[in-house]
Length: 177
Length: 268
Image 1: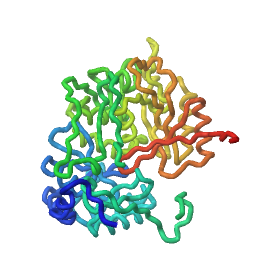
Image 2 (image 1 turned 90 degrees about the horizontal axis):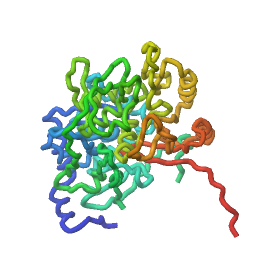
Image 3 (image 1 turned 60 degrees about the vertical axis):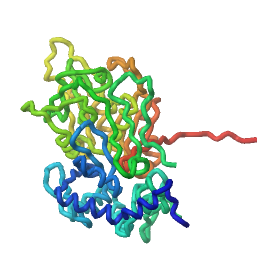
């Protein structure tokens, strides 16, 4: 099935700025600014300067938090995307409320304690992201992730992703396909 | 297909802290520039001081009508939970000070939520923020809106505190007369997976903390998996005639559902 682009010019925009380039831009910008995220519950909060807000939106990481702060723009990252930025792209430090950066092992352990399926979900997320697909939450559609070829405002999603572990039994209550 | 995940508030809302409109960023944002969502400008900002040993903020200066539906009153003073405090700080309606009267930044307040003391967590805050932005009035489950101390009583008899239970759930205790109330709270903490967190009242411009009436529903925060029938029934019994709803937070989205009993009619 052909990708369904939204409106004229979307495909051209996508070709002009492939997702790999957008993610690389985000990565280098975060490294330069020594970006640090605050771990809170199942989210990581980052404060972004105005000139960097676009990088997050265009590469589809995080969701903006609306606040009254003028000079800082807060974004909220899910566990998979935060771990991807931290561990794979190595462009984000993540700290707890004690301000101490968490190493990958600590983070992994923490995230797994919050969500038992985190390891499998991260595997799926990172596998698809590495191929430069855009991966977003599939909660609205009753699935785990939704995959886009590029920014969701440019193209309709092409895949719904369900993460299933081999030998998964019914203890987590998921509907078996 | 892509729908808003926040609804705009009804136009007859007189309480001015609501009316946030947020669309799902990934679907509807302009690709070329992130849309900047605007909050209404506030010139009158309330002030509160964080009281560490209470785990709450004491309101020092009240501005606006929002205080008719926010915070609990104890002996004439108003206190806010961290979620209420953060919500108001996020929308620019509150300045929070520390012991030295230094203004705390939004980051400082986010850090307090990250500490996850007294049952607070980011997800619970997201639920609070979502409902509050829609205009609902929120009470911490079973925590009275206001308690007066009769004149002449030693104020030390009435200690307001937020403590952690072994399960890590927050409990708002009133360390005085209302012992039965304490017992109710602690026993409800035995259900580990699911616990009532909020009593939710419908938007009401005439709301009075002194006579709030019954909440519209009691809200439980789920851990992600469906509740067993037994768990649901236990909580339902506790809530009496008040309907029960559940909510689930994931990736910044808050979903609500209820588990209802139906009797399907015999069809012709």
